[in-house]
Length: 125
Image 1 (cartoon, rainbow, N blue to C red):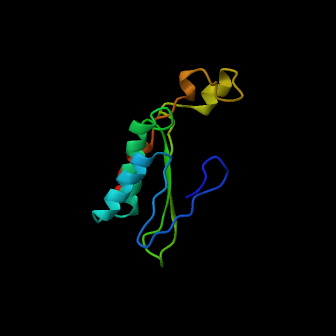
Image 2: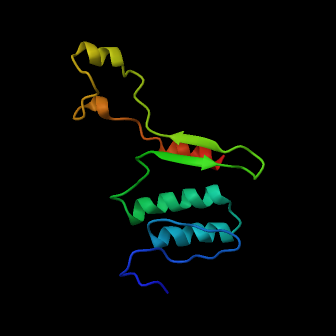
């Protein structure tokens, strides 16, 4: 057993799968998904959603998500970008015409549409 008063990491050994999250309940849930026959994407989605409950100050469904996915050892790694999108009416030229060199941080122009839920749905497919 590692002494948690000293820096370092615990040794981990696994034969059929492994999960790492910032909260033990999210990790346990992801492991349960794997034990029930789910794949790594299923486990990652379950853990991410549960982290929104266990650590709402850190993450949630109203944010973004990113994933690197490899369907099998012979396929290419695919990147999934579930980041927020700008609203359809957003217009960089209009911001410049209003005298802004960058997006004003304390305005509605700085808000994006959360991409996590769409990213989770895409990942599940």
